[in-house]
Image (cartoon, rainbow, N blue to C red; front, side, top):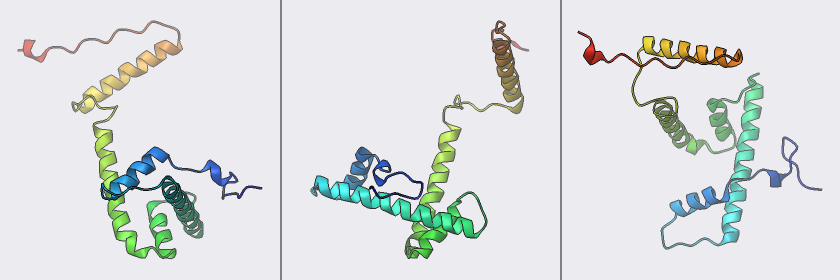
Amino acid sequence: MEPMDIVGKSKEDASLPKATMTKIIKEMLPPDVRVARDAQDLLIECCVEFINLISSESNEVCNREDKRTIAPEHVLKALEVLGFGKYIEEVYAAYEQHKIETLDSLKGGKWSNGAEMTEEEAVAEQQRMFAEARARMNGGAVAPKQPDPDPSLES
């Protein structure tokens, strides 16, 4: 019988992408250092176990606070409880950097066309998209998007 983790799946079901982990391992070492495949596999397994340990303890911290969603502060508390307190400052800094990068990527991501919209433009675009959706739902034709008036032609 296979060992089971918290959610009832076998340990083999939980893994990390080998290519990504290999890249991380190589980036952390000097270029002239090689890592045997068995050592890479062991490092990946250690990472999976560490994530399981932190997740489990974070869940316990969360439950003690009668919360249903694990928040970053629960993870930081779990690190402290498990004896990794000296890493909390560095982990928190990485978390803050991640938030900044995520926010930046959302601003310039797939929902942005590179130019800022005014609130009026955003409302007009939203209304146009609603109209298109209604037309599709009702099986009707979609009215073509009206071209924006050229501000240089206005006096």
